Amino acid sequence: MADLKQTLRDDLTEAIRGRDDVRVATIRMVLAAITNEEVAGDVARTLTDDELQVVLRREAKKRREAATAFADGNRPERAERERAELAVVEGYLPSQLGDDELSALVRTAVQESGASGMQAMGQVMKTVQASVAGRAEGGRVAAEVRRQLSAG
Image (cartoon, rainbow, N blue to C red; front, side, top):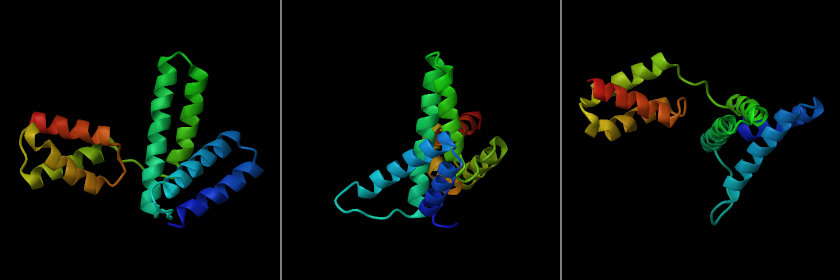
């Protein structure tokens, strides 16, 4: 993958030229979050693409939660804006696993670890998270692990 931060900058330039307000605002927010992450701590540093993915996932989660909050608060126009921003952020993330793929990964992890019962959830989660690598939200993974361990 090309340098993700440079891709974001290039896409920002294109969005400004194309007068795509949602895309411009979203990419600016993401770049600000990246910069904040780079200067956090004692020494400024440049983030790797993997670290950038972590920032992007965090930004996507914020948008998802805000959209839900606005929808619950009867603010549909703000919820729609958050969903539009979420779509922009998700465009920079690896494609998400489908339910069937996630279920298969969890099933494999349960079988490999020989886990049975909820006390083994942490062990299974550790194994699954390594293979999921940001392609599914932690809550989804935990729910599937919980479902399979309680059913088994």
